[in-house]
Amino acid sequence: MKNILIISSSFRKGGNSDLLCDEFQKGAESAGHKVEKIRLAEKKINFCLGCGVCNSTHKCVQKDDMAELTEKMLTAEVIVLATPVYFYAMSGLLKTFIDRTVPKYTDISNKEFYYILAAADTNKANLEKVCDSLRGYTLDCLPNAQERGIIYGTGAWQKGEIINTPAFKQAYEMGKNA
Image (cartoon, rainbow, N blue to C red):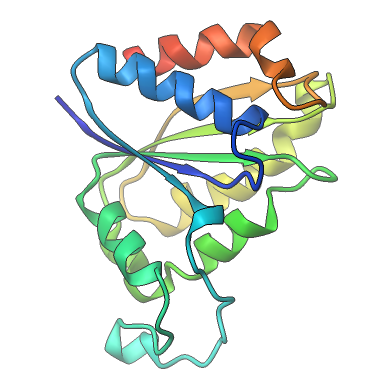
């Protein structure tokens, strides 16, 4: 049994990337894994101030939900980073979240990562820019991180359209095999 943390950065509850998270969670739970899904839109996460205090203290000076979320990342074995894709980039909410992990990012080690992307674009190659950014964070900055899978939820514009795409079933199967 693995401890899995799903980070959903969609502002739309039940939006396409959020639905893919739910399917991943269902699959993972069906395999006996412990899963927690966090909707970043429901948390208070301030922008990084770039003050540098955390470089020596390993604590952020801001008082918001990030300390709690970072602790959840530290205890998870598997982390799923999910985002709607806006103009070929991750959501600002996910980018802000990633920036705020700086106080403890070197402690977020030996984790398995999955990426969930949802976009209206039908060309999955266009989503590689987002994957490159996520890899820059996970594989280049976090010690001993492993990329385990990517779900490309393409061709879904309106809320809920992802249900009719191959990515929906893939999310369940990927969660089940996490």
